[in-house]
Length: 67
Image (tube, rainbow, N blue to C red):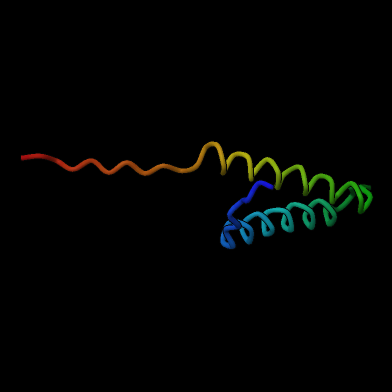
């Protein structure tokens, strides 16, 4: 069995992304998207966000000036 470390901060971040995309897709006026399709769009956006966060994280490089 493969053990994956569960990072609660990342899980919350991904759930927030999923929720925002799902609800905004559901509540777009003049758009006849079924509830099931709104969830699919939310899952697609959330999964894309997870993959980008996993394989292309933000990296900060500090360069100190040497005198």
